[in-house]
Image 1 (cartoon, rainbow, N blue to C red):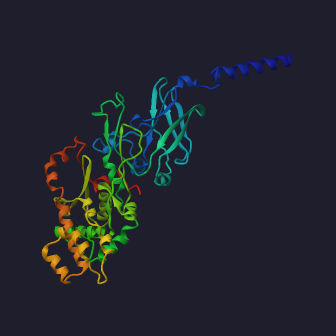
Image 2 (image 1 turned 45 degrees about the horizontal axis):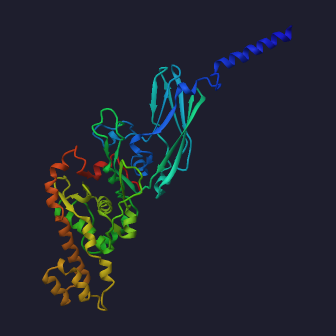
Image 3 (image 1 turned 135 degrees about the horizontal axis):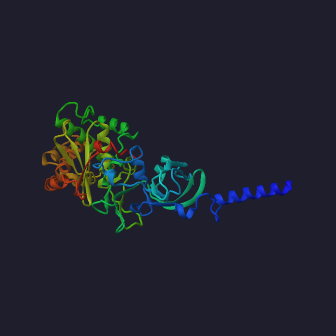
Length: 427
């Protein structure tokens, strides 16, 4: 009798335990009712851009000001579920991968039956993201726990883009833009600022070269208070760039399969320096990096299918000068210097290539050996600089109202210093 009582008590306990869980799964909460899901925000179309993740890596606030370009940019990964009980404790674990560390999000779900959506702040391996130069598949696994019990698991498959890919705009699918959004298009050309890198370790060496080339004795920003001194500093950077032989080369196309993303390949500062190749935005990024390091305040003006540089000529930022950076490709200085005669002068054939940028007097002085080749190249740099400074002036003046209109995303005036509050250098 005693043994039978024990058996009945044991059976009762087993039945009680079984009744506490879901009859099919044995879990306390039915996964079907919790309805845990994970997805990539539809704006990104399954693509993950390291440039965005790296540029915004220092942003702490999940809710930027409405005037910020980040206000319309959602987090890429989201998870949703229905609370199975009042005050349930939710824990979402994002497993580690080659590009992220384990990430844990924990929240209280106050109301049973309420649907909640969260955006885990994934702990990315930023060094790995910086190194990614080709499209790579990336799988993320998210596990949902409620009251410390594993409830469900979801996998996300994404494509990690090259860090050189800069999204200029992203578009929501038809009917999926957020409520209240004025347009399905999200403009992200402010991301150009992330490719400007005033802290690149190559710049101090370049600054030494600039000082040795004789146009300026110091790179002192706005300290003198004279706009002519500012222009002379920019001219010195310009001359150094011409001597380096940085020429125009367009590789803006990418292999992005998304028809809703407008993406451009942008070379980093060291890529421009090493390869001596740049398109309009690459060259703007290159010049802006050096100018910021020397204490000047550059801007990038973006028009449909083109970008050009601007810079304030005074500390109070009242006057802006322009510079068409692609003019550096009009003359290849290294090619000229490779063809000097035994006396260190340009032969007639090479001189003809640059004669249209020089005055008759300058050419005559050179022919009579009154000036050296180095002095001639300085004169040539100044002539090209003057042309580059006026190249966009007419169209810029015509488009002033467009640049001043915040709703016109086809024309943008990007102040790198202002954008530094939200956008950090990628590399």
